[in-house]
Structure formats: C-alpha cells, structure tokens
Length: 192
Image 1 (spheres, helix red, strand yellow):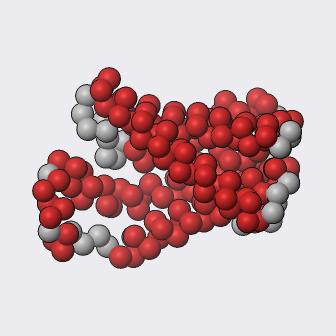
Image 2: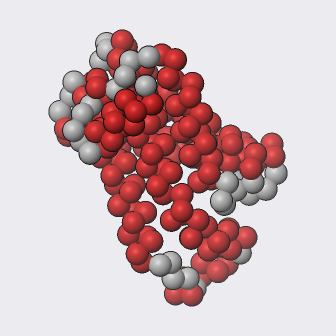
C-alpha cells in the first residue's frame, strides 16, 4: 500500500494523474493528516513557539479539509472527498518536506526581523540568499499548480477555474492560519 501511495503522489506531483488515481481508503485520512501536520509543523516551529506552530499546522490541515469539502459540496461531488483530500495532503506534505531545509536557512533572519521590526527600516542590510529564495518560490508555485490541478480534476472544472479555486483557497487558508496563529500566540505566549 505504501508503494502505491508514493507512486500516486509522485504521478500527481508531476501532473501525470489526478486525485481519482489516488488509492481510495478512508483509513488513509488519519495518517495523511498527521504527515501533513508534521510537515507544516516542522516549517512553523522554525520561527514560532512549539504550541503556536502545532496549532497553525493543525489549522492548515483543518482549513484544507473544510475548503475541499466546500468545493466538492458546491459541485455536488462529495463522494470524491476522501481521494481529493488524501491527494492534497500527500502532495502538500511531500512539497513541504522538500521546503523545510531551505526555510531553515532563512528562519534565523526571519526570527531576527520579528524580534526587531525596526530593522525593516533598512532592508538593504538583510540579504536573503537568492538561490534559496528562488528554490522556495519555485516549490511554492509548484505546490499551487498541483493544488489547482487536483481541484480541476476533482471538481470537473476548467484549468482556469481550478487555478481560481486554488487561489481563493490559498488566500482563505492564509487568513485562517494567521488567525489561528494569533489565537495560539495568546494561548501559549510568544509572537505568532
């Protein structure tokens, strides 16, 4: 089963398959939720306290579940939820795990800026490595394109509408996770 998951995830990542090609098994949801939450948590914990990072990682996964359910319900395709959500979780986890080592290289600068916002008055003093920035942006664009392709297949919509759905979900998740981070910052202390 593990080899099938890896193969399906890679095929989706390289636009050779859609969520309909992901193994259908509702029992996969829990392990994939944990995997995606761990991937996002590893990202957030580099710049946030562990409590806030955990809340934000869970909010990211929960928000993705709500958005996926909402899109499929709107299109009256709720039966596709498990495969679509599993494909989104698997691809998100894979690309986030790829992103973590690059983010670790810019995290110290981000922590320094967060603790001393007045440093932003002189942005020329902070030079992030261009190669790392390029790779991070490329991985984020790839993730966005994969998400759009998954929603295009799952909701039976055009590529343009798949991109629009992906954009709306990305913006909504950004606000949802930021709100969760603010709430977590109040609960657990520290800047979120």
